[in-house]
Image (cartoon, rainbow, N blue to C red; front, side, top):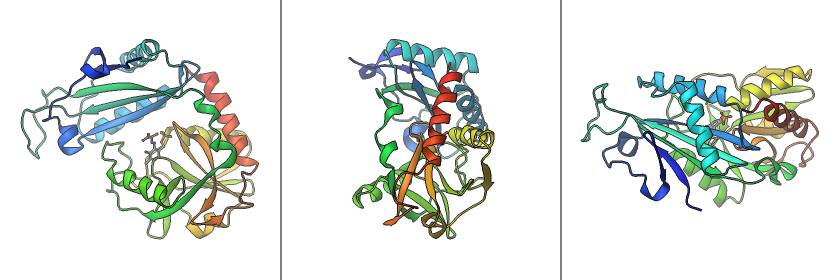
Length: 286
Ligand code: PDD
């Protein structure tokens, strides 16, 4: 089946959706994005993604082209048109097409380019990797200094994913000034006893929507949460480790730079957090 995608107000077959070569998303990576999961035909934490989208746009002095209700209607229409039960909705807003290349932002009346498309992933929440866990390597974090803005400039995260692939593992964790920032496209955590440790929010990492929910559920489950940086050595010596993202949810990490974390097998805490997260988010899905 040909996908139906959304482009600037129109629902089109993917082959007919075209964007200008002068679009600043294409020329300058001048755009932001969100990825929202769909489980059982419903959107997971849609409100959280909308709030972060508004913040990313405002940090880049871009107008939000839609209200939350309008964004919701577009997401739901795409889920319906493409018959998505489990999968993701990708949303991107760029500063649009000023008709030429120029470093300065175009005038405010330049229309943004708004693109949304679905990714069909049947059984997304039953990913078998959650039973075995991911293996990761550490790589230097050479990204720009505003990682809290969810921009489409993903070249280094792509390079880091390829470094992981070439090393025969699942993902890379970024390290800066001797401590972990986050994963290529996820937030990073370690577990020590009853405590979850993850880097505090700042410009250095993306403020994960899954992160916020998981930390809330962890506190509700009587776990302790400590927001501070950790080193690779501390992570290798932890009881368990994991990552979170809208598409992987809560995923155990069992090996870092060739060293086993804890027993080297998926532990007890991370699967429990994953279960709580998925249960609660399915209940709240819209
Ligand atoms: N990535 N950190 C980075 C660098 C990310 O790209 C992401 C999300 C996260 C987790 O954020 P959230 O829990 O809101 O998904 C953290 C998305 C899934 C992606 O690029 O596909």
